[in-house]
Length: 351
Image (tube, rainbow, N blue to C red; front, top):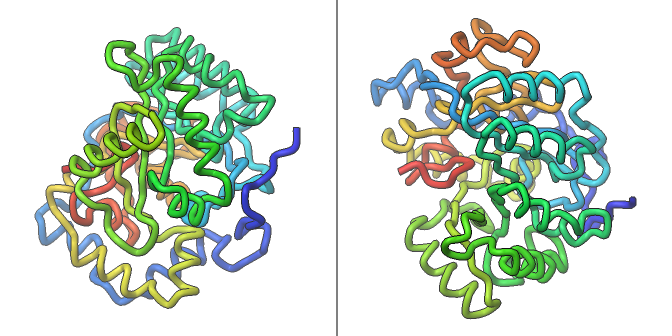
């Protein structure tokens, strides 16, 4: 099957650009003259920041995707080849089946492109886990993946679908021409199966991020507006809206640098630091697994190649829940993105 991107936008990796390197991204962020994130935490008497346990095991199963979105912190796209190998999948399944971690969160790229994605879902559900799939929606319209909505429903998968805006222009600007129309089609198919409908137990949540260098608006107010507009304009229902800050990583970092807005954006994030948001950051209850089995505090640290603290087990092959449950979190300037304003996480605002 050929995966066609909606916009001819090769990844940073494909273009051999400096910011395709995680080390170069870290170096660029370190050069921005804003206060250190550790200093901000120390001022709030929150240093060192530690995990509170592992409630969510997030598996990034690969970087291949059928879209190339302008803001993507993964630099995912059709030209990426990194996919989780069998040995790592097998070990992840052992962890899922042998621990009491309640939630498995599957992401990518487009995670459904992994050849063992269905097996991961089925076995995780059989182990009694709550399974979340981070779906870009358009994948469900590709011929080989038209089965996805029915499969989601059959296995009670919690679908977390990304959609920058409820207007076509804003979404297509960020995600590619035609993405919005296809996304609405996919959402209607999910609705037809009961997703987003009261009383079905089939959960459909949407994720929105600002189209530009702004902080997200109030999540509760935006959710009410989105529910009203999506139903009125497109007849689409959903359960909850997550607002997520654009992280200064990968392609969005490239945009900030090219547009001369990196310093201004980082200052905006740092100035909006909120200790209450920092207390609820996702790295405290989530463990992120890279496609190669390396362990990270979050998906953002994963993309910057910042593994968990050296005193903690660093791969799935030496996984130790007790050692990881209270690990010290690895920090960087990008962490201001999760602690600005109402906060930001894979589950939306943190306060």
